[in-house]
Image (cartoon, rainbow, N blue to C red; front, side, top):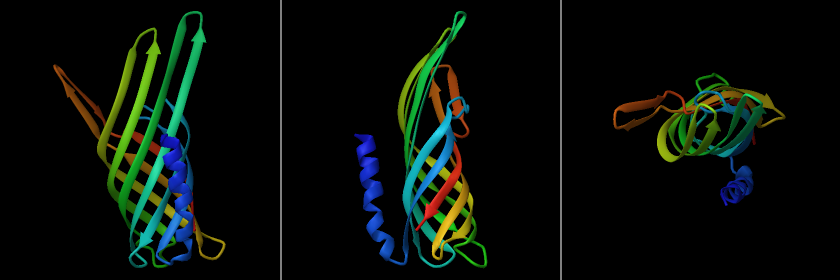
Length: 183
């Protein structure tokens, strides 16, 4: 069901291409969980709204799914990490030729995580939905007239969980490095 909603959002972003202030995008990233134990490809779709050449608003959905299975006679690990993140960020583009150049964005994200891990030394099964800070640092390059290609780093976090007698903190809950094509 989540994948269907994600794909519907991606398809609905295409008609806004004709408007000058709305700029939909699709991105391919290499992502990881807080410990960078699960590493792999992820997909991001969203749209930018430019108030002017230097300030804008950006919203996206980021889907990341990764599983692992490692077995040998003395050792085994089996687990999965699924994350769906929706974020709204305020974006600043300080370059003289904006929207090209350096980009910095910060805002809030709603992140849903489903993680399960089983091994000889540990087991956990975690499902959570949190509102977290989100950050994006990137650089936009011109691509075919009005389009842009970015190189960027996205991060969400921190997350803290307190229980009886312990405190668990993740400074960065999800880290991704990748590229976007902006229409």
